[in-house]
Image (cartoon, rainbow, N blue to C red; front, side, top):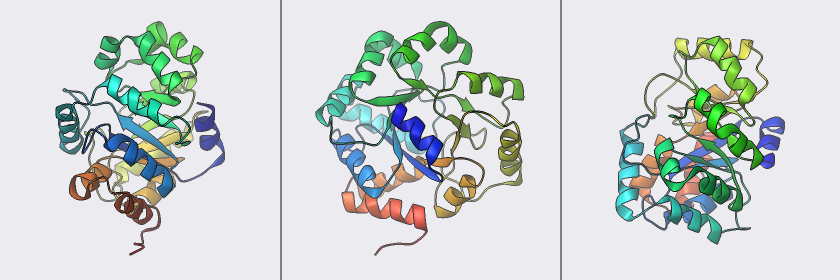
Length: 261
């Protein structure tokens, strides 16, 4: 968690990339992770496949379905992360849903996260109140950051509560829709970003949902510490596979707007 906190405090225009563990192939997790680090991504969010991902759009839902069909499980994911101890240095965040964590066992899950250098966790269906009552002590005592999501509809009072309980960054969902790549920022989105910035929160913000190209990446970086790219990268993996050169090219184009080819 310390490395993630340092990044958020000292670097601007951060880029985080989401991908689903076990997609497009069961052994793609490590290959994609290493390729993203080589491409210069600041940190990654690895999706824990789940059969009922309510907050995800069709692209990520499909990748989750394929990963489950490939045989991906939480145990398999932790085994894959254990195999690359010392080979990957960028912070790793796991993103998914509460039910698989409960089935795995929260204490065992957090222990595996700590053993495998996982910096944080994003569980969209874990309410703030439940986190504080049941999980906060477990997470903080094991140096695991719980990352809260806010939307344009989140009341200011609640945002301040989430800010006070945050230890790395707040995930600013760019719209109230499900995940998916979009083009450009709307007036409503800009007003939302400016409203949150005016609150002078203590916690850095990363913007996700709808970041699909260099233009949207650079635009949201004007209002936050960085951007999170998910569906657009999953589409790349769908079309081009987990080839290292292709992944590096995708990230280069995203960061600079230019192709190296």
